[in-house]
Image (tube, rainbow, N blue to C red; front, side, top):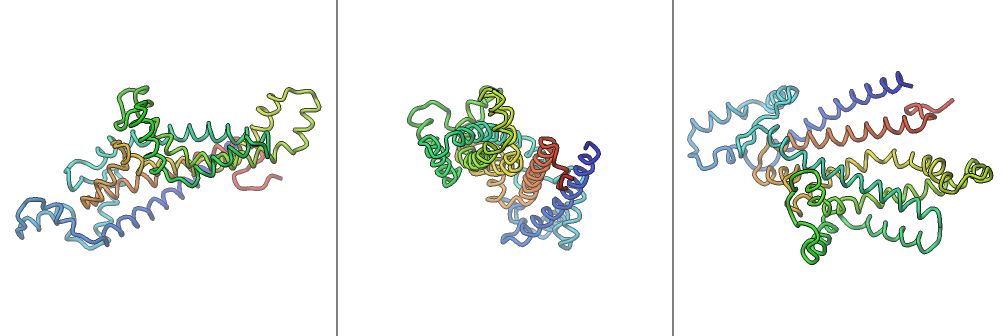
Length: 320
């Protein structure tokens, strides 16, 4: 299994590299074709003299053909040099290293809340199918699925930060516990939508597992209900949840873009919006590349975890 797992991980990493190449080329092309001239941003308040324009074009390779510009940028990116921000003149990697921890902290926090509440409520709903408890949980998950993160974020912000003053309305905090306190509302806003998916999958999987013969046999052996549910039913019900966990993690991290803006958090979302508004081409490319990498890495981790969780799975091959 370890050799198969290593081989599978190597194949997926090769696919990730190819996809990142496609993403980088696509983003570079879209930015290149977007209206507006980066020279206008580069010039700022400087006079637009032929000498100044020529110097800027040489510095940023704007005087080169399109594919030459892309190759120059890609060559630097492979050395982890994403260039300098057009607006701040600082390295893009420095801006990313400052903003990325906030986004990752928020995404992982929301992901943990999603799994805890999604699996918990989904399992409770499956234990009493058709009951008022089941209908309440199912109805709540439908509401969560139909509410965008920025809407739930605005609602939570108004109720718990403005009206009740239980949580801060903005900022990321300093220190682990202070960050938890500051990021609780945006994390719940992100988790509300994702939790609906997890509740749905957990409930369906749990209902299917509870009808299996080995569950009936375990109960007939006199095992306690708690042991049957935790050791047999819930453990096997989590396998479908693991399959979508990579998608969920990628969703909460990319969904943090709008939530960060609503809560004035200095993360990737705010960095992207500022770069887009100022036509900061190099920063936009760097942020897009990092987001794509995070999503692909999350899905790779989820697939490997799925293979480890179920010994019958042989990485896409049917068990024989």
